Image (cartoon, rainbow, N blue to C red; front, side, top):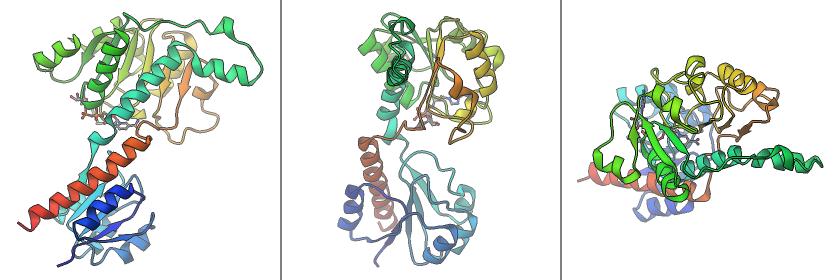
Length: 311
Ligand code: NAD
């Protein structure tokens, strides 16, 4: 029996090759609408998407032989996972594909805020030689507080410790094994302690009901006035209104943000008016390497899924 795979978003050609080599019949249709997907889905055993298209319940109910939905990336919020589970359809993703890319962007944001790179660039383009306003701080020997020490938190710790000689402190729900702590000289602190001792705080937790607004007004007030806050996790982890206040009133020195409560960030958002914040449009995973890795890895996971099915 030929397994039919519908690829509904652009993935790297190496991923497509893996599926074809396995003997799957691959059909490519870029970003179908929900109604198009409802018409298309019949006869397909696998569906591959990225953050688009949406795969709501009505699509899942229409599927007749669908066994697996693969997300070439991390977040599965465009897929009705509950509806899939009810129908015994597996949902796979590849959270490890973008780890390095996000950690590197995080380091880029730290440097950009600490050395006022984006600000200096903006001024230079306006014809202002802002040298006098661009005095920054070194990272060497400073304390980096990592909130959520999973895949990205650990990749960042490695860069910061071995590339910049930073001292690493961290907070997560459960303490890391001793050998991981020792590898980075990482010290386990409570969230409150971490916020009060860190020169740079970087957030790497998933968005859950527990982490929503984890960083609020009272926690921002615990931070050093000279501290930098970085968020490449999810916008809702920070209370944005409180952050704007903190940046305006000097409770902290600056921030670097890749993710926002509202995306795209509205044009006249208060954050866009502040010189001590660096903003990027959710580009943590947007590198050619991460995109290739996610295409290849999701194809391999789908291939392995069917190999197990037909054993
Ligand atoms: P991970 O699952 O490997 O690590 C998450 C860490 O957060 C773990 O250490 C976990 O113990 C900790 N954690 C979970 N809940 C917590 C809580 N309530 N309090 C304290 N710690 C808690 O995830 P990861 O691969 O490192 O990714 C982290 C997040 O980065 C993702 O969930 C995603 O939101 C975000 N992300 C962003 C981009 C981007 O483009 N900017 C790309 C990929 C991932």
